Length: 321
Length: 258
Image (cartoon, rainbow over the protein chains, first blue to last red):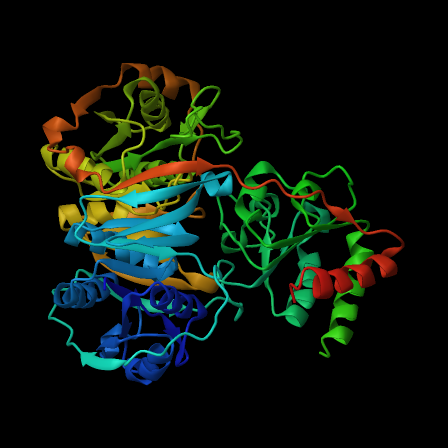
């Protein structure tokens, strides 16, 4: 049985949904699933890891790992990879995953594919489907000449289910002494407590049709009711209405939520590339010829200033909020 | 001091993607190639860093087919970089081979104080070469950087992390800095800059001379497909109240998206 190591990200004592998906994917594909978690509270995640199929839970319970530091995480991960020699390593295509694992790949002679949306396990080989050119096409990545095969998956790719629980045997490791060249001095929290765009299940994006920055409030009102994250088109980011971390598209974030609502976004090819993997797309625009309608599941041709408040109000009633 | 900028040439974001008839890869006909947008921030930051450190030199390096990649190197030289390095290679080299080639070439040029790259290239979205380069050169890296300052033997940077948060970190130099949008506003090449760039040196390396072989390729792409055609949009009729209730009904009962 091939061994798959899953890097588990957690927040406020909970395994992130994206990591739960990875544990379940490995377990459903008959892998010997090993979970890895870092930080002083990592031990409290052990039973949740086991419930999602982990046979072993490898921990480095060190407060130095409570926040991400590229060198310390690399050192800790290297120890575990060396001791467990996994064929496959799965992690989220998250801020931490994307920073850490390419360096681990270079260090250990592994291959790495990021941003994957589907996996196929074929014996000792893993194949990963991923979008290229921000979703204008797809291709399957294959590995060769690798010590291990690392795939970073996007969030929200599979529905969560119940899998056969694993033994969840605890294995603790200590953090090796590291001569640090990188020091994290401060984390400045973002203004929003919402989920990151790339992880959100519902995204509501605004474009130039909103006319001015302050009208983004209409989107935030709807987002609060739906538990959604607010995104934006490049045009309004470049105009300085909102920050770049909200940009959806080829030079921003690629998103694939269950529901994407585009409000006053005309749908430039770069924007469409960044969101067309969304499962259901709603477009609200006063121009019936806007390209966004070519990608939309449902369209409302109308005045967003009239439609949005009604939509927010109706959802509030229906969802009882 | 020596400053390096690594750049990649990618299809323009406006480009329509087509495949070769056998589905084995991108059909390059009709594609306009440009410098990867994030690499423009890297070039600009290198120029600003040189302004603060008179006497420094900026080397811009890229890996890929000579005929086209040389154009993006010239663009960077026209923006203000001093010298170009072209590693001649195929158009689909993977991240590991690319990072190894870049690292070996930089070593042959006797190293760098700071290496700037883009945070990712918009073709494969891999976001891997910068970190691998740091590993191969045994120097620290910082990715998704939106603020950079350096003096003495250290650099202070801000990284954009999830949810709009920022991480302030200090790294020892030499280091690799992968630029995000927001780091600066890249300048356009001026006409005198373009004229000067024509006379600047572009040195060439081939992969074999850098010790990179086919055995270094770890990832290849196969089975290229276009996204599935979407059924036509369902436009909702009536006044805004009717449209809104119809939409909520469809999202709940038809699409089951809520």
